[in-house]
Length: 218
Ligand SMILES: [Zn+2]
Image 1 (spheres, rainbow, N blue to C red):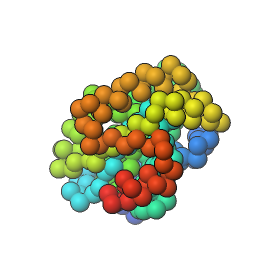
Image 2 (image 1 turned 135 degrees about the vertical axis):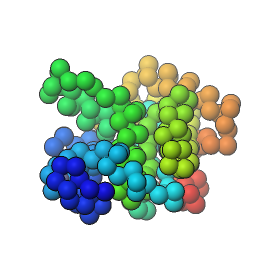
Image 3 (image 1 turned 90 degrees about the vertical axis):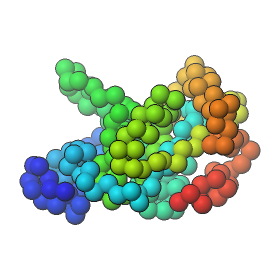
Image 4 (image 1 turned 30 degrees about the vertical axis):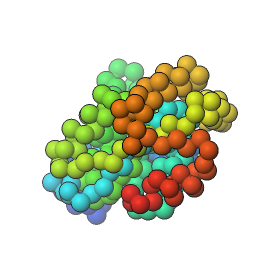
């Protein structure tokens, strides 16, 4: 777990948050693990030897407005899990793409998976919140299986009208009705194939959803 940039021990010398990027309006932190001595952006090969089979991973999917970020933030505040908000990852990617239009732009989902693996290697349990479709769910499973880890996967599927209202009413980034619908249809497929992982949070508060469906998983 030696930093390739400065040879310091990354387990003891790292920062998780990139505060050079403007903060998210939804207050999610922009997680981007770096060496705290030289600033090297920590990569999976730097720390993968330290990914333990005892680490825990919770993946929360759901359409825009389903409550992924609010729930992820709540889980992180009530536990030692680090919350990786996929929207914050994509914001960081876009921010640097604008500064350097010639550079290649990483895939948001792959970048989120990479960040998750780096955190696991640094010794943290991780909760990820993002729109995870079937194809991407396989990517997560494949990557984690390399380290004999299997994530807990849950999908928030409140009523469409609840998602739409929450998405369009919020002050920060909104996906818009078109994307709420597209993602909603995608996420509802899980109701048909994997109903046991789906949570309808339409008629409960965030605290209730946490207490009823997530507290026991932590
Ligand atoms: Zn370093």
